[in-house]
Image (tube, rainbow, N blue to C red; front, side, top):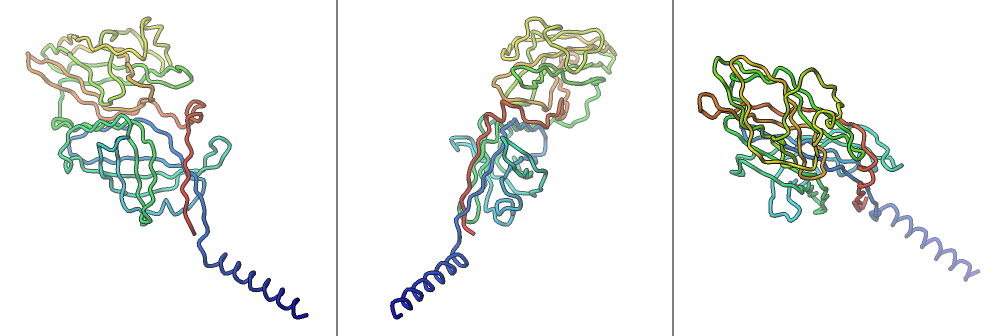
Length: 316
């Protein structure tokens, strides 16, 4: 009986210890998260921008989406030679999404930064990363994609010499990706002087205008017009840097198809544009603010195949 009592007492003590450990000792847990890199480009004249960046989590209402748990946020290059401090404005829940047969919850992070405080008018990071450091000293590091920031003092100034009367993007499906292959626009001269167009400048480091392939067109083109039907020698992976000249007579309007060449394989669907021209031999510029040429809400099979899932370990 005495042995039985000892055994029962030992078992009871072990159970009590186990219960205490379960209740009071923090348990190791894990949270999966992921993101989809894209291009981010900005043009303005004040030095303050806002960045929206979505992150997908395997659990809703987790500790990582609490703004008060964040110590600092940094936008960096892969080698961290370029570091831009960001300010968290807010974090909002967007939707539930099934990615690779697993349920995730999408949260949109809104950040801001002031480029004027960095004394830098151009920030180009082809391999940008988002680093979120939490108060427990752990951090998330996610590939952001490419980041392009340009500050132009003359941007947003009134310029009535030129006028865009029509603007849209021509989007083709290439290698299972929707890709903006050209800008379809009508450009009008509002003056009684001849204007000489010299250059179309895109504010994104991932692509450029192929000036030698710019073509005047008659009639309207559909959004998914095959660019090869209009420009037979077009190749989206080729960029030419040849000079360009187009004269616009007084009050004349021209319909142009402006093909785009890509430096890398990233998808670009919005950007700002500058048109450089001469007016009586004087150099001028016309600015088009950031324009969304097409919107894509689904993730392609190619994007899902490249999706990387990371794990955040914590105790609760």
